[in-house]
Image 1 (cartoon, rainbow, N blue to C red):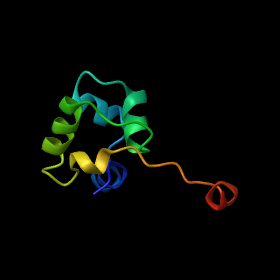
Image 2: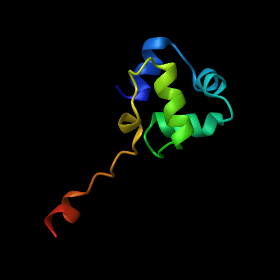
Image 3: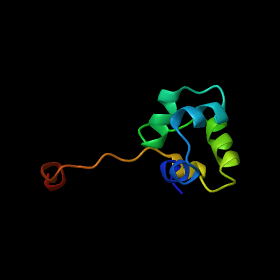
Length: 74
């Protein structure tokens, strides 16, 4: 399950999630939620623990940027 979906289901804000993880900024939680950056091993393990295993480390990998049609045809 993606972090964004889990946080929505749990009704958690970025601030609340940052507080639960500990030693992480609100900005970094936002980056993780939108899959712009990947977490450290410690943060990934903490998120997996907090979510009861619903959000796994592989669910936190950054999204690959989409290629434009022009890039895809070259």
